[in-house]
Image (cartoon, rainbow, N blue to C red; front, side, top):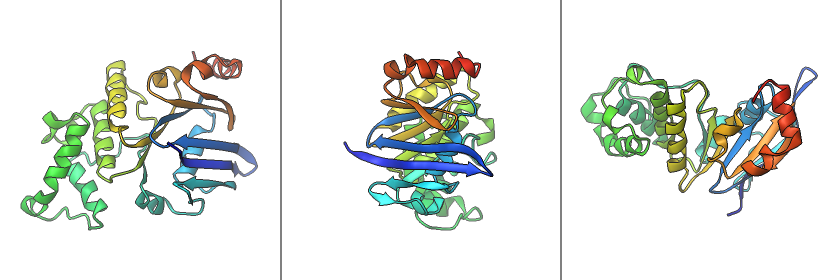
Length: 249
């Protein structure tokens, strides 16, 4: 399928501390790629570099054949690379439908017309309903976001992200803090929305991405320890040592 996102020699220093050290990464188009590691491994910093919320100290980032190293987050989002956040970012007092309509308004380059009548915004409803159905929230379409469970709030955030029509979706620990039932629900959701898209997700738990990812990159102390499918990385002595040493099973 070809590589859609690449990092070459990606490095980030904070006042002498090297959080990410000379990382090379290739994400294949149409794949689900997991970036994992124990706490303090540098994966969140690496993720923020790839999504341009941090500027690298050195190295290059290439998206779809274009050097995006010095671009702002909004610029690469317009190119089709869109991220979610570890903390659920929804409007709690708006309904599920209204939350997704806000994202659709942004995609079309319009202002956030919160003050307009429901009727004037109804032209977004069909597309909003499609994305809500895509993430399995149709029965909650008129519920306030604040009323949703944590797992369903994450699903709503993904629906709003999909409304931006990304070619590549970057998910920051989408299953953090979830009960097992919600982990299974969001895993199934990620599989569904991955069809026709590329997904890069950050996760700290190797077992969570075992059956979900096509390829796994393991970071520790800011460097790549291992890369490959689950069977390959789970048997790597360096990976086992990193997780046991960090207090993870």
